[in-house]
Amino acid sequence: MSQPQPQSPVLVPAAEAETLADGPTSLITLLADADATHGALTVNRSLLHKTSPGAPPHFHTRTTETFFVIDGTLEVLAGDEILTLNQGDLLVVPPNLPHAFAPAPGRHADILCTFTPGIARFDYYRLLERVYKGEAEPQEIGASSEQFDNHYFDSPTWRSRQTG
Image 1 (cartoon, rainbow, N blue to C red):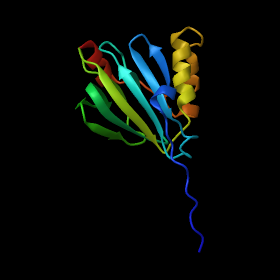
Image 2: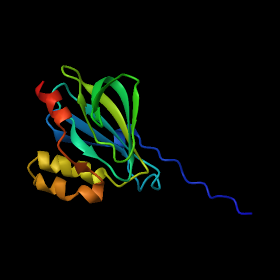
Image 3: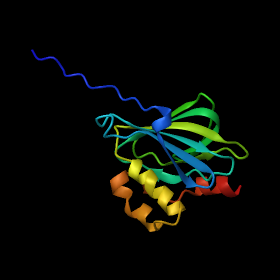
Image 4: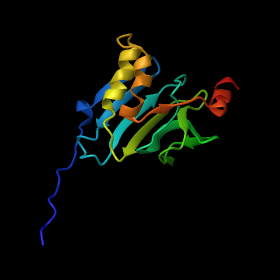
């Protein structure tokens, strides 16, 4: 009987992690993409300042997204419900469940996000930064839906949160 071949652990020293700005009020730190984890997961950390719009309504067809709140307060659209997550809270969003997220009004949110199984997403975050800097067109985000498994839609529930 053959023994399984162990894989090497994945270590990402904080000083070597790439940090991007996808807008004036949020930073994304790229920790481990699918190629580094042999497809097991993708991990990033997002720091959303008080006025950050966060991520608009979307869903993923191939991955489960998990949110862990390191600090602050995060509001998350999950289906047609808006949930409030506080420091230490964890939320698991299965494939095909519509969701969006942003810091609660007047608060910030520092979150760890994982995608399982892993999907190469770091180029998506780099695209967001290029759009923010005016180096790419916003239409490129929509055109990349299948590649990065981000499928955007309008949510009256999430819209009412922003205007209400």
